[in-house]
Length: 519
Image (cartoon, rainbow, N blue to C red; front, side, top):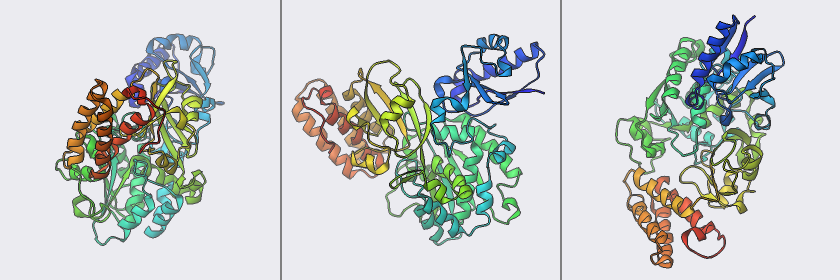
C-alpha cells in the first residue's frame, strides 16, 4: 500500500521551494524503492512553516516543516514517510498545532486538506451540496437564506450580501450578471489568493448559487494579473466543473444555466473599487463611476449586477449546505460568521487565521502571531489594507467587529493585519499613504487627485520641521476635504492612516501630547 505525502502547491509554498521539495521526495522514494503517492494540496495557512509537508497516517496527518529539498534524504532516514516523528522538523499531528486547532474554519475547512483541482476530493468534503440544495429552491428562498445568515461583504464595505442580491433579483431585466472582485490589492492580504489557488471549486459553487438566486446566467471573476497561479487554477477548475455538469447550459440536468469565465486585471489598485472594476471589465480605463445608479441596478454593460468579493461568495456554499442559522451562530452583534484574518508584517507567525467575529486584536497578535518577528515591542498595527487606520496598543482589546472598529474611526476591511514594531516611524508611514493615493488615484475627482499630492508635500514639511504647527493644521484640513469630498473610498479613506498616525503617535511628527480620539 502506498504512502500518501502532501506537498503544498500555492504561491507562498512555491516561493520557498515546494516544487523542489516535491521532486526531492519523489526522487528519494524511488531511489529507496518506496511506494509513495504525492498529492499537491493547498496551504494550511501556516505560512512561516512552508513548505509544510504532511504524511497520511492512520492517526491523522503528521506535519514536517519548514522543509528544504536538502532535508529530504535525512527525513527518509528518520522514517518520516511512515509518520515517525523522530526528526527536529516534525510538528506532530497538523490538526493539533495550536495555531490551527484554535481556529473556527468554515470557509477554509477544506483548504490545505484537498487537491485543489480534484472534484472527487471537493465533493468528499461537502462540496456542491449547497448548489444541489439551491437548485431545489426558489430564487427568493436562496436570497432569504443568505440574508438571514447575516453574511456581509468581506471586501471592505461590509454591506449585507442578501440585501444586494435581493436588489438584483427584483431589478427588471432578462439579462443580469454576477461579478467576483478578486482584485486583491491591499497590502498584507492574501485570503482571496489562497481560496482561488487552494479551493477554486468553492468560488465556482458560490458564484453559481448567486447566479441562480438573482436570475443571472453569466459570471466573471476579475483577478489581478499578479496572481498567475490563481488564474491558471481557476481556469482549470471551471473547465472541469463544466465537464462534470456543475456549469453550463443545464446545471446538473435541471435546465438552469450559468456560465463563468476569468478576466485578468492590469495592475491598477483602483480597479478594486467595484465601479472601476466594471469599467475595466467592459474594456475601458478603470475610472470610478458616480453613484447612483447603483451597480445592482445598472452594472456591467448597463445590466443589474451582483458584485461580491471572493470571501463573500466563498461563504455562500456553506450557508446553503448547513443553513443560515448555522452560519449566524458564529460572531457577534451585526458581524456574523467568521472573518479570515491575514497576519503579516513584523510578526513571528504570519499566516491565515479564520475566527468568529469578536476575537481581539491582542489575541491575534500574541496568541496566534507570537509577537513581533524582531523581538521588539509592537508599536502600531494597521488593519484593513494601505488605507486602514494605525491602531496603538490602547485599542488592541477592541473586538474584531465592523461596528466596534467604525467607532474608533478604523476599518476591518478585507481582514489584513500588518504589524510594525517600535522602530517604525509613523510620519513616514502616513506619508506613504498619501503617496500611494497619489500614484493609484484614477484622477476623476479633485480631492483625491490633488489632495494626495498636496498631502505628501505637507507631511514632508512637517518631517523637515518647517512651521510644524501650521502644517499640522493644514494637514488636518486637507484630510477633512478628502474624507468628505472624494468620489470613492480611495480618496475618502486615505485620511484614515494619516489621521490615526497623527493622533496616536504625535511624537513621530514632532508634536507633543498623548493619544487623541481620531477626528
